[in-house]
Length: 278
Picture: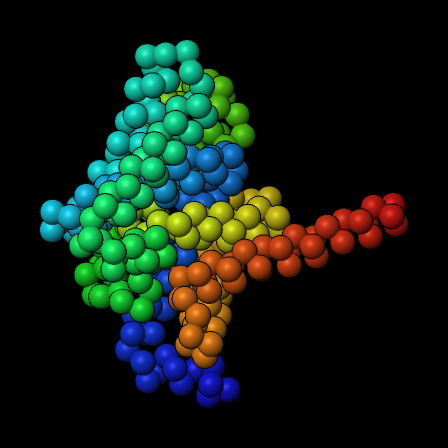
């Protein structure tokens, strides 16, 4: 039992990493539930990758990486809105164009700047074991912001998940709440990438929330299950990283995805058995 607890008692880096993982898990549980229910995985993926040139640019001029990520996310969201409003292209087409364009730009910036060579792994896969107190403060603020917005806008968000037309019929501005939901996704990506990286934050948004959607039909319960899966994945992933010298962020996300497929298999078998009996 000591091998499962002692590392967190004796290692200050692991303690901060676990706390950061818990904060990221709770934030992604709330936002990820809406991403899954609304089928917004593509925009979530695009935002997770679209921050790369912003982060690279910020590091090149000596600014905080999180500020660059915020700029990258703003360019992605603003660009999608501009393209769809001024052309006949679909939302998915606009997202796809900006997604691949910003990703390619980010890769070029990183590959052409010698000063970023050592930062590439941290940008893509995060630095779980390098989290500091300021990162924890930023993640705590982001979590509070996400929870407050989700509570205040819970009814229109719920309607958006199942029938966008009903939002307007109930007296809410559907477009405004859609943009607010995009803001939540962007804020989650911007803050979480520092811990799990630009390429892995998408997994923390989807996998735990996917588990919640498989085993519950109520949004609140989905978020609760997603939070539990995220926290468990953080613990198991960090333990695997500690004992086997695996990359911490990748271990956490892989654990979350593995849990999803285990639950998916169990739910599928259960439905098949129930279906055969009926």
